[in-house]
Length: 227
Image (tube, rainbow, N blue to C red; front, side):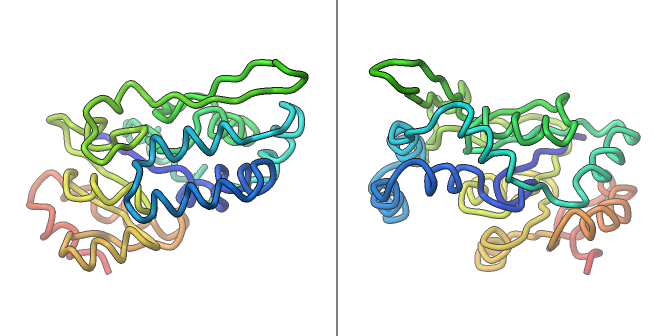
C-alpha cells in the first residue's frame, strides 16, 4: 500500500507557486493562468511561461518560501505512516525547489517528491529561472508537467490525498481518495467515492479507522464507512 499526496493547498496552507508569482512575476502571470483555466494551454506550458517571469534573487525567493506554512497535522500524519510502513510520495504539479525548501524548514527532508524541476542561472545581472516538466510528464493526456495518473499506476493499493484541479484526472484511478475543496466538489459531481477532510488533523483518525478493512473490499464500500 502506498500514499500519494498533493502539496500546494493540501500539505501547504498557501499555494507556494501562486505566492511566488504574485510577489515576483508581475501581472502577466495571471493572463497566462486564465489561458490554462480556459483550456487553451496545458498546465506544463502555463507553469513554464509563468516561472520564466519571476524576477527575484535566490535570497528573496527563499525568504518568501519561509513564510509558507504547512498543515498542522501533517507531521503527525507522517509519523503514523512511518510507523505503519506506509510509504508517502508527494506528487505535485508545482515546483520541486519550492516544496523541498518549505519541507526542509519544517525538518522534513526524506520524502520522495515528484514535481516540476526548477533550474536557475545568473545572467544579464540577475537570476533567471526556468522550469522543466517531470520525467513522468511524457504522454500526459492533459498536458501537465507531472502526469499524476502515470505516477500512481501500479498493482499496489493506493491512497491519494488532494484538493485541486491537478488532482481531478487521478481521482478515479486509485483505491482510496481523501479530498477537500475543489477536488471534493469534483468527486461529488463525477460520482467518484471519496473521504472528505479539512486538514490532516481530521484526516488521520479517518485513515486509522478505514485502513484495517481497505484490503478486504471494493473502494466504494470502504469509503462509505467514513462520515
